[in-house]
Amino acid sequence: MGERACSTCGQVWLLTSEHWRTRDLKALLSDENKSRQCKNCRAKRAQSRRKKYEQLSKVKTYRSEYRNRPEVKAHIKAYNQKRNQKPEIKARNAEKKRNYLAIKREELRQWEIENEIPLREKKMTEQEIVATNNYRAATANVEATLTDNEWLAVLKAFDFSCAYCGGEYQVLEHIIPVSAGGGTTVDNCVPACYSCNARKRDMLPDELDDFQAEVIATMWQHLFWVVPLENEDGTN
Image 1 (tube, helix red, strand yellow):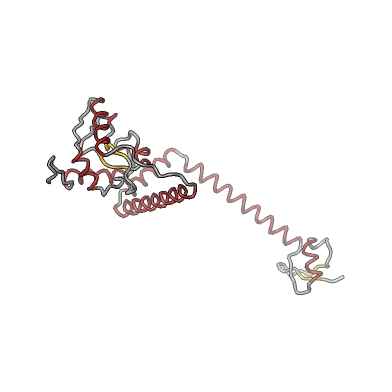
Image 2 (cartoon, helix red, strand yellow):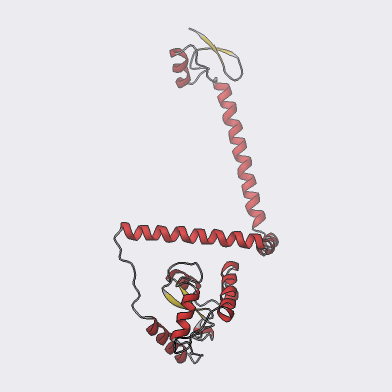
């Protein structure tokens, strides 16, 4: 019966099941050039791994308990709010969100094509959209002064795209919801897609996250100073 040295401790052991695992013993008997760990070294390595796992578990438990403390949560929230106000962080987050939405829109488009789902089409003309939203605002006793030419000018200003994500325009969106006192006026209406319209719901601008609030601030500035409103005769 032969002998072989352990690859870790260097101790020479007889080739028996007392010192080697069955799998290692078969490998050593079949090839003289192979090296394996003896049972003692494997047991020590397993014990070391168990201790390391236990230590990591303790660290994870402590970290979780620490971060769930009220004062720590408040500190982290204050730090993140301060950090997110930095211009470079705002720009980076806005870019990440635009890229994410673009990827999701493309994935949805591919899924619709693969499953042969017909694209959703607008069921109303722009004139009907304006009339419907003016009626809705008047029923809610808020201002309803949006004209067809004003709405067309807003659409041109946003290039017939969603004011929030830049996607396909699908619905008229009130920046301040009608339920919160916002009227159907040129300075309160922007084009949006179904997804952004549903995500915004009845929230006010100051209730949105930093990116959306920044977009809305830009929208208002754009509507007040840039949008060229056409007269009823079609001239600027």
